[in-house]
Image (cartoon, rainbow, N blue to C red; front, side, top):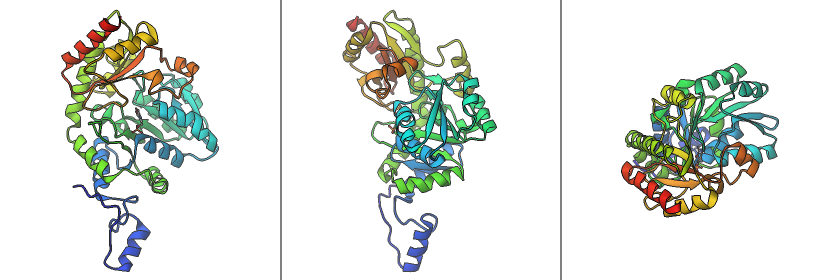
Length: 367
Ligand code: PLP
């Protein structure tokens, strides 16, 4: 049911006053505080993630920034995996330090480094499948380190989606999504959501209402429609990504492919244990021949679109250094393993063979 109202009327002033004092619970008052369509979306995502509660946001970045701001105060420090979405990297390294909140970034596989960094820290943060090199985090190990340090473990589960992984079952306290991606699934909404339990979520919800970056009811309704097909979509795009990764891995025009189930080592093992043996719908690869050849390759694509985002109906490709990770300096790009030819491909719902044919013809045309 779509209820787009921004406000609700009351028959008498006493019940209006009571509902306003409680904000939620005694009926709906004002949509920045609560709305039935947004509530339905939150309940659906909490259920998918196995969480007690969820709170929806206007975007993934609104969910992430509100989480950091509610959990940390000036003088606090966040420990985060270095493999992050560019926007998250920017808020941790540039914006939060202006408010006295520092970040220590450590390689997601450096468990000893993370354990050491957690001493005196306030929060541990990572992505289930790290952006952009598609590395799987060892959530059970990181969860134990966070628990031993007595800090909340917050996981961005956008790339995996709850179809492949439910981080709370592996030690996470809080799970975040850019609902713009797999939850919505059709490239037609911007949204975010945080799943967890009280008191963490209560505190965050208070701040969310003050900051006001709430999801619109219409976007909540669109996201609910997307969730109805999430399992079919994730399974199909993950199967397509795995097939494409295998083909590109053999191609002379590609210097390297990054995809969990390809790697013989820890990636495949972690994908087996945490992602049900799938690798997710996103892969990355290095086009041989540098930035100019990569631009020619991308411009020769006819089915796959040059567009930001992931997790939707259409296959989208980005050049990481010039689109998703522009916030990083050259040295930081190097450290994150993002080369001049580094492309991220989000596989949609098209025919897998059409996508492979498109990639092969573009590699040939750009050689
Ligand atoms: N987290 C991840 C892993 C992302 O890839 C993105 C965006 O691409 C975000 C968060 C931010 O989400 P939004 O664009 O909905 O703010």
